[in-house]
Length: 210
View 1 (cartoon, rainbow, N blue to C red):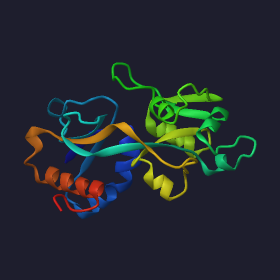
View 2: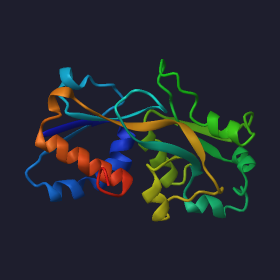
View 3: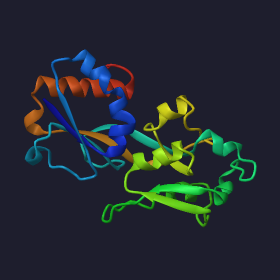
View 4: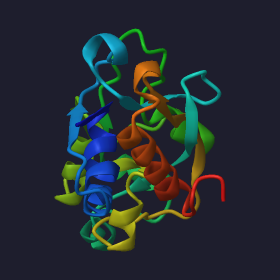
């Protein structure tokens, strides 16, 4: 048994769609995924690994890479001639889908860094829909309920399949990144070592250390 904890967004949008690749290559390893916004204590709570989401440069473990942000929506929204979506300023005509930021995390409101970067800090959208988890906001975007702030690489597969589209060119760097933590007492387990190698290969597209 290998036990891993991570956020719902990472689990549902990035990890689970790839997990069959690991379980097929390692049929003797059973994987348990804990998808939660709670910050688990790996040793006390019985977890081997964690994929965490935190500030760039934070001392969380092995960096898995940064993140870029880009508005995304259902393709049908870009075809609505009554509400154009050709420039960032057109977001005033649309519903923005956002995630409620947990108190005490020192994170800015989800859309704020992107709007500030494009010079629209004061933009007022037609409406907002707020969700407790990122995967819920992306589900709402998939069903055409508004425009979500896409976190790449989490939504890259949805862009490739054209289930979501980016109405504006370009991305901006996010102040947050992804990290892998391994519990000290789990480091020597062959299953944990195999998963860590596989995860780094998935992130970097080549064998770890290659």
